[in-house]
Image 1: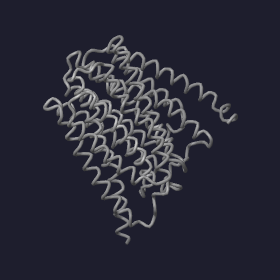
Image 2 (image 1 turned 180 degrees about the horizontal axis):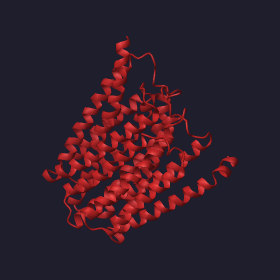
Image 3 (image 1 turned 30 degrees about the vertical axis):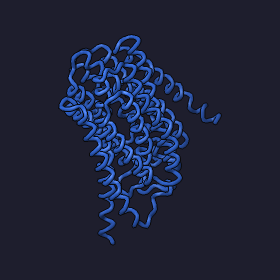
Image 4 (image 1 turned 120 degrees about the vertical axis):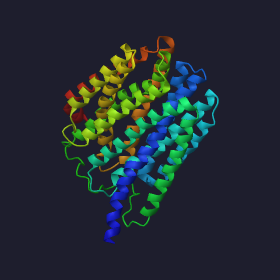
Length: 402
């Protein structure tokens, strides 16, 4: 029995590292291949923004619902249904030949995300591991972010060889993830400790509220959500509109994949460093400074025309966005109750940023130039910084009234 228990912890860690990674590789393939394929079909900037809107709309509407459902029925079923929907939607995308089909099936990708990610985030808080919540979230962030970057990297290469190859590969990875999760969950059925109750308790979680300073913990949760919304407003523009700008100035799909990989790689670097320290917890200054890095990157995209300038821009966007995302998800999960609901809201907030960034950015690019959306993104992040600064200065008054 002792040996069996010793084998369970490496198994939990393995699933924490591999499942988000493989699913995010599939997402990275889809995120780049869909706009590139749509461009080949003659899609306008507005249509590209609409593709991002279709996916994000389903994501935004459903993540709070599914997140709350996880708290009631557990993560198992939604996790598996989400992975299955990933597989079916990526398979359907591989069979698409019309723009309207891309709209339909990218929407199902958003539904899959709404089921899968809040469920997995709750699971990671309940895994029986020696690592604290901070370490688990760091492992999770590194896993999905590196996978997303690698997916973008190989998507450009595969797309140049054959436009449907990224979708075939995404289908294979989604199916492999289903078998991986099913295998782990079948073993967990024999565990005496149930993890399906929604998480009234977290084991081995030394980070839980350790630096929250009492009532400041939920307050900084809201600040993290504001920052994450603005950050993903920027990401939505980059994900669906930057490929058109790149192709317009003569950059090949394979190089676009390298550039998007740069964002994910430096975001992964940020996740690794943030997982090593708690000094940034529940502090406004690091969050605001990280958003200034993102603004600097957006300025470089607006002004630049070379691969090197874009590479540097995405380095800053990845580093700055890393702290913003980590703050939002860590503050969402660093609670004793309602982790499913809070993780669902976290995902819905970033999904709203993706939705508005891609749609509004596409409309502005269609009306003006392909660079003009990044000026709007700068103003949105600047406005978010102003809101966060005012909230931080007045937090005592806000909580006295609540």
